[in-house]
Length: 309
Image 1 (cartoon, rainbow, N blue to C red):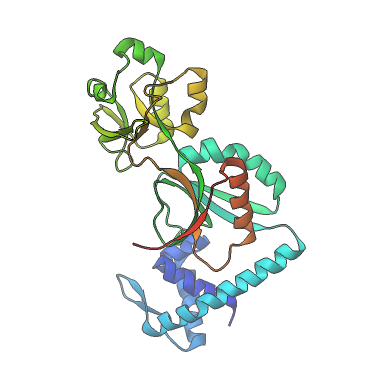
Image 2 (image 1 turned 135 degrees about the vertical axis):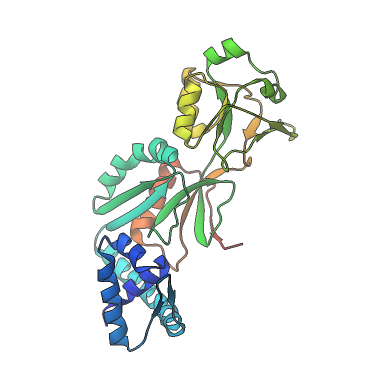
């Protein structure tokens, strides 16, 4: 048996269908189906139960996959360590982040990363949806959240603080709100749910939190577009510090309540690095984690294991 035979079986099991596995491999689904049938013939057992509607792992297939998973992982670790012992990390690194964070925070540093690690081929998947790391064969993800969820290894990359921003022109036309309660008279710009709720939270230096209901005629699903709408004077918007730092410094946007902490989700929101739980971290992933920490991270970053709830 070839190790790649077992890799194919695990891929099909993770994807849940021959067609989904074929998309990952960029091959025809019939080729995957034929290869799996040939492997089953060599093994003398049926790994998958087929029907016209679904594909499921058989009882004996579940035993085989459970016992071979650690063997494949150990082989990958040995191969990775052998390679990195004699040369720099190499291979394809598939990474995902939100569109805004990827464009603003990651892309400006990729030239330096490519210079430092020319043997790594980077595939950057920018999406505002939470990509399934296992199903999409993703090595590393950046998630913006109060706390990440899922069966992953996580490390805090950087904290995120939100600012309620508007243009000077908008404030000249509509007035500067004295308190967050005054936002009821403003046409606020909001992110499409579930990212930003209809209530925004504000916390003063004493720790007192107030919840303010906000309304607006425009909701947007992308943070870059939300920033663009705020820049055009269409209304106040909650925007992350890494997204509006230059606008605030240049005076293009004004922080309406600089003495308050503001959020639509949680005050402790951060950018997190996530990668699939395994007994070792491949060299290509490790160097990207270290690189992003050195460029964007904080000295207080820590690594934790997140398990399913």
